[in-house]
Image 1 (cartoon, helix red, strand yellow):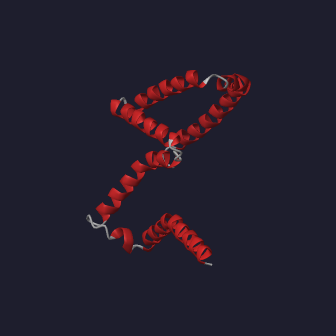
Image 2 (cartoon, one colour; image 1 turned 90 degrees about the vertical axis):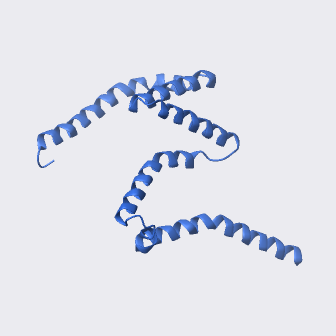
Image 3 (cartoon, helix red, strand yellow; image 1 turned 135 degrees about the vertical axis):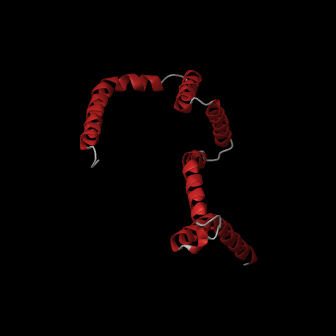
Length: 154
């Protein structure tokens, strides 16, 4: 920004122009988008899948990414059928790469020792908070089991 301010402000201006153009183009097309949502699922699902495959392949030109899309789409489908929320799967896919990079960076800083994850106050606090959040459902089940046992004995 300081070395080449014209480029930076040109980028900002192009974002404004792009948003205005998007607004001008999208407002008249809202009824068309609503009509698209009325298409039957057997037509809409393959179209979405095809566009997704093209998008995934166009990002890195890798068939591995297309296979990953298929595997995680199948996993998400099974999760919905078995009444599991698919949001954690999506969150893991989106944040997994960044988490892996951060873990690698932390391990490089500590010469491979995992102790860096518990010796720093911030990381130790976050680990404790994570453990508490993970154990809260278990504590609720134990508490409800004790209440049921107390009611049955009374």
